[in-house]
Image 1 (cartoon, rainbow, N blue to C red):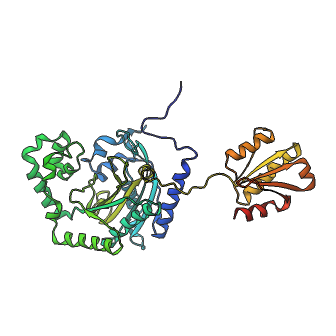
Image 2 (cartoon, rainbow, N blue to C red; image 1 turned 90 degrees about the vertical axis):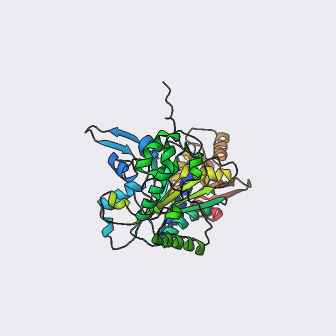
Length: 423
C-alpha cells in the first residue's frame, strides 16, 4: 500500500523549509526588539477552552475543530488558534501577578482546522501570533499593529492594506446588538441556518457570514460606529492618532468584525493588494479582547493580539515576486583521492564544521569526476581536493567554483584560508 499525505496538509521539503526558517527568524528578531517573549503551549487542549474562549457561535467551534476523546473519556481538541491557549497559560501560571506588566508573548506553531483546502489555506497550518496582556492603553493597540506591519515590510512586501474598526465596549455592543436584531429579524428566513441561530446568540456574527456576505441586508446593516459611546469613540480616536503618528496608513471599515467572539474595541486586518494573490486577501487579523481572561477563569485583565498564517505570508511573497535571501549551497566540499586521503577527509570535514563552515564529502565511493559533480549539485563555493600525494606533502588543492581558480594551500592553513575567502 502506498501512503499519501492527508488532505489539507503538506510536507515542507529541503529547499523550501529554509524560507520558513528565515521568516521565523525575522519574526523572532522583531519580537525580541519589541520585548515580546516566546511561549509554547500544547498542541491539544480541553475542548471546553475553545468553546468558552473562541465562542460557540463561531465557524471554528461549530464546523472546523478536530475534537476527540482520549482513553479517559476526556474531550480534547487540536488547537485551532493560539490566543485561547496562551490566555489559559497566562491564567494557570498566574502571569497576571508578574511585576513586569503588560505581559508580552509570542508563539509560532501548527494549528488545525477542518475546512476546505485551497491556495494558501490548509487543515494543518503554521501560525505566528503575539498577545499583550495587562494594558488598556490605546498605544498598546498601535504597538501590536506596528509589529505586524514591520514583519511584512521587513520581508519586502509593499502591496499592503491595513483595515481597522472598533467594536466598542460592552455598553456599545449591547446597543448595536439590539439594532442588528431589529434589522435582521423580519427577514432572517432569507439567510442561512447558521445566521438564523446567530440572530439571538450573537447577531454580530451574521456580518461575518461567508454564505450571505452579498445579501442586501448586509449592506444596509447598522454600523457599530454609530453606536459607540463616548468612551469607546475616544479610545478608537486615540488608536487612529497613534497609527498616524507612527506613519502607518489605514482604512476604517465598519463591517470588520473578525470571526471570533472574544473581540471588543479595536479589530484589524492586514490584506495583500498584490495582483493575482487571490480572492481571499487577508494576511493577518487581530484585535482587543478585554473579557477573555475572565472568561477563562482569571482576573479582569485587558488584552490584544494578532495571528497570521506563514502559508499565506509565503503566498503573498510569491505574488509580489519577492525572493527571500536564504542561504543556498555549502561552503566547502572535500574530494578525496586514494585510501589514505579518504580516511583523512573524515577528520578534515569534521574540522571544517567545528570551525563554523558548512562542509560535506563523498559517501558513495564515487570517482573524482562524480565527486566534483556532487559538489556542483550542492552549490559548493569551494572544493578541497586531497590525494595521497598531497597528503604526503601536507598540502591540499582548493578550487573556487565561481571562478575555477585553483590554489595549493598548506593543510594546516586550510581553515584560515577558507575563512578569509568566504568572508
